[in-house]
Amino acid sequence: MDRRSVLRAAVATGGAALGGSALAWVPARASNTKKSTTRDIAYRQWTTTADFAGGTAAGTVVGAGAVTIGSPIGQVSYMDPYQGTTGTYDYATWTAPRVSPGFAAAEVIPSWTADTPGGTWIQVELRGVTEVGTTTKWYVLGRWAADDNQIFRTSVGGQGDADGTVSIDTFVAASGHGWTAWDLRVTLYRPAGTGQTPTLRSAGAVAALLPDPGKIVASTPETALGVVLDVPRYSQEIHAGQYPQWDGGGEAWCSPTSTSMVVAYWG
Image (cartoon, rainbow, N blue to C red; front, side, top):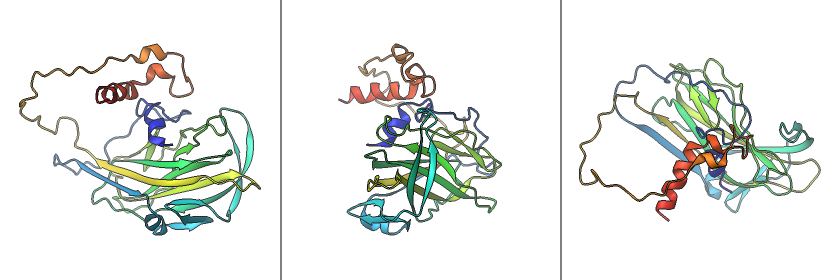
């Protein structure tokens, strides 16, 4: 299961793809010193046994191109905020090697692919080293399971501090606190005392520092000028009232609706 399809499909940033509370405000740009019109974007992912072996395992096992629970390092009690149930879970972690994108990123967005059978789930976190030299706390970017009937996947609001905040599935740096390096950590959970395990098959994140609005000069129109594509028209409004736990439901999902139109056009 690809978590991005869930996140962006409930978004409005992904407009609340994960459901749950999230901060509605977005801090200023990460740095006021960047004046160029360069689009700084860097993506790093881990997808193979060799990739995962380069990370730090705490209770996890790397093999066959994936990360699973080996010997848990502890237990935690977790109350599902939507189902109202509380469970006890064994957990283990895998932490990726530190990544330096080469610029002070204003935003960082993680992504992953995982299997979560039998009530298992994962939590994905990010922390960074800011351009002023401080190391941030760990921010939760998502609690995720493929089956909402087991664990309700959710974003986590109320995490903002002097270094930045989390907007649904995106870390947004505060002004002057852009990330010159970042760490990604995935915690794997299973119902306590069982032999189940989630399987993390890929993990990654994209870091970006884009020019301020108005800093990019539009290119000169060429042969595509005046060409209208026969893109199907979809309406998010017909989904009003559906999945209200995700940012008010389908009616709010402008981004996934637009994406669906483009995908449908290309077949």
